[in-house]
Image (cartoon, rainbow over all chains, first blue to last red):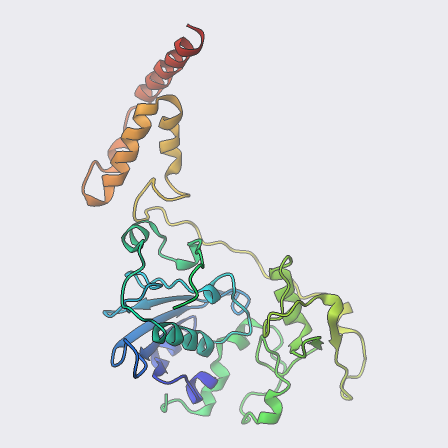
Length: 139
Length: 192
């Protein structure tokens, strides 16, 4: 549980929530200082399948504030390769949080993905059913 | 995070999903020394330990399961180096009595396969890849214009167009008639 002892900056786990249902976690996250998301608060929802850690968790943004970012859809789905094809069982929740914070922090301009409205209308509720196309590693 | 004491470490969801919970890590404080010998997958003390050429330690059952998960793309979970059954080294500590190669032991029982049923009503019935597509297909073969018609209806379904339920209630007879008409249409086109 190094996530509880030494989480990435601005990250806390909703422990009570996780105790009621071990397979669903909510992680609170704050935008890193000095970035476009400074001072903003976000919630990430993790769902772990019975095959975890051999299968990646389902990770989406939930709550009122979904970050406006070129790789984050307005329904909370995140386009991030380690959440599907680049998943490794050695990755931890801590590592995922750090990746997402890093993705937010390197953003230069707040905007939704270009296909946001189409995707949000047609996608499954589970982002892991989307065939993601990872082509932009600059943000 | 300050509310959680070290006791909560036993509630890590990973230790539930793995079978090898024989390690006595519960209750005692984890020391840095112990964590050096933890499996990189289940985070317990490595059991039937093997080490990859890139130096990463795993339980053989854990690593075996990972290699089975992606048989065509076998990479080290830690550093993504190429890895294979033949290129891992079993570790024999003094304590382990019978020094049988862990790789020769029976692989762990494969977990039961259970797939979630597809949700029946997605955002747009008939538009997704799986559910509801069959109906559209039925029309599209016979009469081309009707294929367009149904597609447009499905497009509008989310914003209050013709609800797809109505289409589904079209009499079976009408469908047959359309099909037969289309058949003769093409028949005339090709052989007439």
